[in-house]
Length: 108
Length: 120
Image (cartoon, rainbow over all chains, first blue to last red; front, side, top):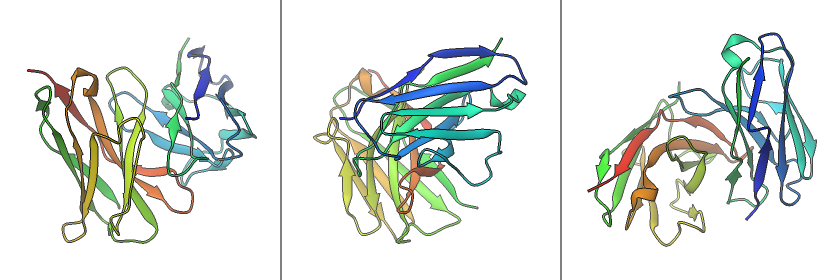
């Protein structure tokens, strides 16, 4: 099984600041990695797929990068609605898929 | 607008079988462009993929749950279902149904989720 680790576990920032979240895979997943945002009491929402492609309707302040085992989600300038938990997901060993443990972005 | 809605008992006794149904509206479950899946999230924890099904009935399960999971599809009702047998307290979670594109292979539409508690 491909294990994903995310860091940091919690990121405390202020609105307007830049957020940089990391996801590392236990083995190469090529570019087959996605990022999701989850707010309390809501289902996850797909933000980024295949490492760097924004999903439909996702604002340009969200960007993804990386390949192989190291990936980054960047939020260029945090809006109040961006404070949430972010998960990465790999699908390189289709049909199986695994998620990372999540990074919580909270208000400093 | 596509919508997915989970339904089923919110409380299941240990050793019994958890059964949930996902009803899809605003789109056809028989589309060749999508798989349909179940994901769960224990309270305060992360996400775990349970399994996926294609409209033809082809199924794919998480190896760690495979011995206890059955996913089926009813195209006439635009629904798919999950059965998880021999449940324990560790199966207490919010269960989500979701759509998985055959192009991107990620989950692009999700239901709101339903909490299932395993307790006597």
